[in-house]
Image (tube, rainbow, N blue to C red):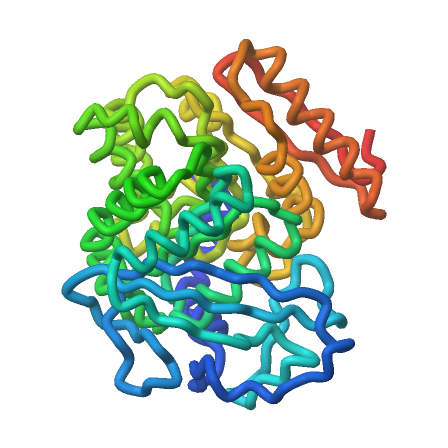
Length: 389
């Protein structure tokens, strides 16, 4: 056990309190934001939603933390304030009312009563984006409104040009409900599988995936089920699969990868050695490491994935758990990757050189020196960014 891990284990009670403090205020309404003048809004993003959540008791929240009996479908239009800074998810503090001139805010909400209605919306959007779709699966302790705003921030800051789809599973948004959330993630795997099949049937030619934290459990289980069914219709349409800070037991992850089998495109696994949220998770799991803070990159890469260690990059989250979205360099890197027409397939040199070129080019836009360590099934390279050499 590393000295860093021993120190953080000693601080476990304080870390739990820190997690609780990040949960935000009690207001989860999507409908009460203060309106803004048009020139205060820089963009509006239409987020299509498939969810395993039950309807909220408060209609203004739309969906709550309870589990629904079947998939629900919606569209939420989210405005981005002109004052937005890349990597930040601007919102009110202490349950104050949202202000669209300062915060991400929902400007329009539409519920689809039938799966067919949602499929029609998918077809219309996919036709405008050349069949490209990005599915975002959020993590533990995320209320419905939080999942909507994070999806919009990722789409906006990455510059993603395809159709954004949020898969929102039944997390309560409360720190004390870790076991409930974990079980909800398991319940949701069939729903995600169905959503991916629906995307393909609606005209998706390429489906990219970004999963965060516990959302990786939902994702890996759904992809495992698709592999067991030997469904090449969906598997053949998968583009880049980005697994950010995976909250999955390492041994379980290995068995999932083995069942999924050989990958046409290597999954991109983002890890951070100083991820405090995953430390708490590993302690709850009997001090077993999670994939997102595992320190044996070559062990994972031997299973066919590309491991990207982003520990050296700055984080906008004091728990160092959301670098994939709150570090301006990484979110731009993701956007360039997802918007490219080619794949990460090919031999080892093609894979690592392309990642290295992207990271170095974007690194010139930030002032601080840092390094990304990329471990592929073929080799390990250190990528200097932000002036580091």
